[in-house]
Each structure stands twice: as structure tokens, then as C-alpha cells.
Length: 81
Image (cartoon, rainbow, N blue to C red; front, side, top):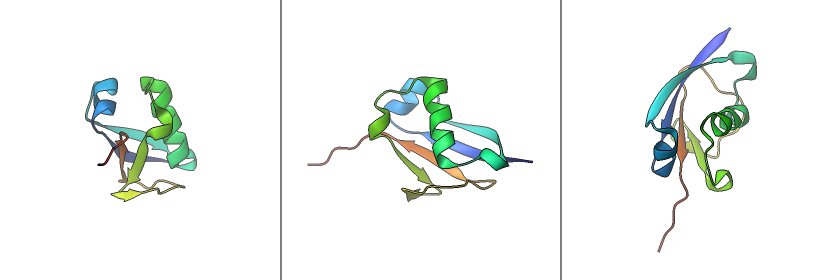
């Protein structure tokens, strides 16, 4: 069984991937935030991996299993002032 998730890449990450968003079909038994991050890092050779934040359905810091229809956003490091 598989699920479909929508990925969004923001800022420098969109530049590195060459796209702002994409839709992926994942096997439901292995669809979790950590494995999706690793898959994207390997596929696109994303730099500064330790500083990237991931939001699932607009919620930062979510971990664990993904569900069909989830939206996953890869956010670059932010600086404040």
C-alpha cells in the first residue's frame, strides 16, 4: 500500500533541488519524516542538512509516520535580528 505526500522546498533549498514542490508516492510501511528527509538529502545533495527544519502540515518539529495527503515543507535556516 502506498501514500502520496506533497513536498515543498523553500528558499535556498528550492534553488538546490531545482524545484519549489513535488508530489511523491511512498510505501506506507516506511513513510516517516526521518526516512523522507534522508531520501531528499540523498536525491538532491542538499547542503547544510543540520540546519534545515521540516514542517508537516504547517507543524514544526513533527516526527513519526506520514499519512496520505500530508504536506511536508523543507525550510532553510532562518536568522533573526
